[in-house]
Image 1 (cartoon, rainbow, N blue to C red):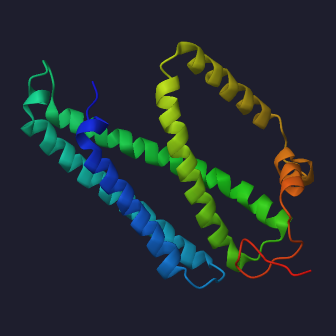
Image 2: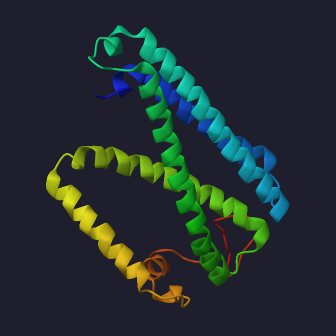
Image 3: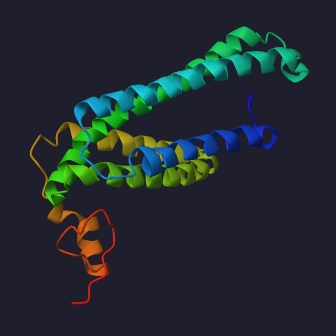
Length: 212
């Protein structure tokens, strides 16, 4: 049973997406418009703000689900359907997903530290790079989720990615703690052949036009 089908609740998904984009625009265009080194205090405050927003949305989503399930005959006509219990379950699923994503985000901090250290990115520009990187990740994640919703209907696809995930976990477990040389990365080597990479950082710009 699909509780919130996209065809019927497209406005809800569109509104949520628009709200997130507005917050991201405020984050980069207003609160972090001027490049500066983010202190531990500032990062802690912003972490608390984003977590609080997620929890507030979780609670409002619970209230909305409870109201929707108790007012829609489509749900009430289902034998054994409990609107209150289903609303709690739906809100708990969102909270579980948020906690998992937050845990993975903390794990990614170590990867960011390695990449920033290798390319000697000044701390005052790291927030800007992370912002656009995360925005790109959200875009591609939406694409992959859309593709996955179609591909996961086939059992062999589920088995393939399950085996791939287990193999990746085993590889990470035995990888050790030695710092990797990013020069050996296939992605870095291909980019250096395809793109004209400037050897120095020129302010906060991602692209630099040189007359040399």
